[in-house]
Image 1 (tube, rainbow, N blue to C red):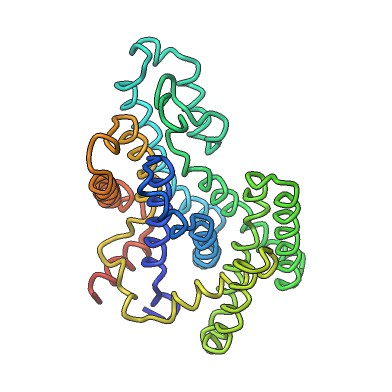
Image 2 (cartoon, rainbow, N blue to C red; image 1 turned 90 degrees about the vertical axis):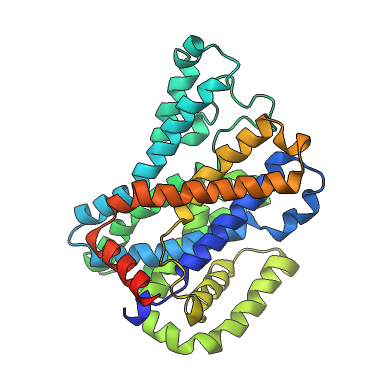
Length: 345
């Protein structure tokens, strides 16, 4: 593999997905002994890390695609099969624990609204199933899926970004700067008026994605300069994140921290040789935690043991999802890279 493919993105994505899963376990279980550990698992940083990696890898995927249609088809095959499976499977399975009768459940308008909203990546419109998880802290079946629609929007915006650069002759740095400034302005404005839920949506997250694109386009240069750039990035990130509480340079500084780690520790290069379980961890953990909470497992047993079992079950589902569902839809090049990782490992 060439230098750009020898990276630790697989390791980082598992770390980010595990961070989100553990944080949700702590929050949703409402177990008092878990709460002191919540600050150790920053879901916002994990998701922002995903967005940076996504910008980098999706730009690479786009440039390696034969056409826009080929690029979009690859994205659909990677995201949709497992996503649709978890939506439909939960909708069917949780009919068994609903407070509604089976007939009322499947004839409920809420059930069909849930399917329509979630299968079109608009889970915020109807996150709950009829009579399901009503005694939990929240009734959402899979509250982690809000980022998927942002990823999908990124995928659709990328060809527009490249079209503006190529056909309209807009300098990539100028265009990236405009997108970046607009994104951080949007984010800071809505945070200032106490609307964080709006701030974190697509425009506010776009700065991390465009940083990933720029890192890909300037890969060789950044790889050579990484040891010189990392220290100022660490300092500026620490100041913004923990001292000033601002959000101006964070997408760049944090993004470069992700880039540095991805290309700075070669012993982790083959971490994903047995498969990419990140997506599975991300989309399966939330309903599993919600089910454990509904069944009262956290309060009727040893909570740490239950937490470990829930996370292990999530991992098992992620592994099965990869081998039985996701892998078969991958592009030929992605399958070849997977085989090469396994062979080199």
